[in-house]
Image: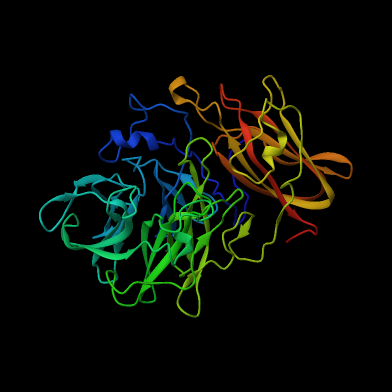
Length: 485
């Protein structure tokens, strides 16, 4: 069955991105710049996993381009259906940053030199390290590139003072002006734009509950300009935590001065559930001026830096401050608004055809991205059945596959998972969605389908990748009591 989306202007977090790449967090000490190889360096041990995070996104010539950590890039013309287009170089380590420059595109990343490509998808050729005013070379941490309306070019990055692990260690965001004729050359900076302030900014306090009142990472800067105002968006306090969020400083002066913390902060925050954490990312506008936040979701089940990506609408309030009108969402959303769907399966205990030891069926519907149900070995047709307390119109599903056997070194790769979703309608089972033979790999798979009044729903797994026995991190069926338009 060919992979054709029928979501019709509807999306659901985490984003349903095809071909999510391999996580490479423990590889990075072995590399000095962007790289494209797939073989894990000797000496790196630990479980394998897939991950995307730290997204930079922008709209250009009718399409959205999304650049996350670990691999690039994803392209969409409607923000609901994404296509993976492999770039060269492919893996930007962390925090890729892209900006227009002289008819082309500049690209850099965490601890990486500067690259240039003639199109948003490259190929990108290396220009080299940035050069500070004293002539020394420099590679940024968590970089952001910004081209102002007058063509002036800027670089933003994470920096710190003091010794890590001591009470005097302070994190901050710095900015640089770059030479417009030679973007490797820094003409001004570093300029400290702001430092961490956990005493006065609760969202910057490290820890699940923000319990470290004297420390927090301020990182992942991104610059946005709307109606003459500069918005410096940043992440805090720690990418592992559900408290991970984005917040905003703004300036009416210049890209390198006058920044004041918004009163309306944080911009994105979700402390728990499937969409936990909403940090390090970017905010970008389309050709009509609509603003969108793209952010990192914390999902540290296999590795502390395992993550996914989410997206939500952004607006400017009467005081010129950024905010998300719907907050951080974890149910289906419409591009045109007005969509209201409930998670019909959340926290209901499914009946399973079988369960592997320690992989209870409830883990597929418990609202956590850290647990998963897995069928027992030898189960020929793994099935989860959730019965409702009353009839509901079900019209969409989100599946997040767990991949405990994923191990490329042993030749065990991710791939398409075949399944059907059925509803009990009028006392008989009816197929609501048939994805029994898909040709596209989606670790998170959101699908809309024609609504039906159901008293129960069930997931039947019909095809798994070779040598992999998948599990289900999340089986969410969405709908409402009354039939929706």
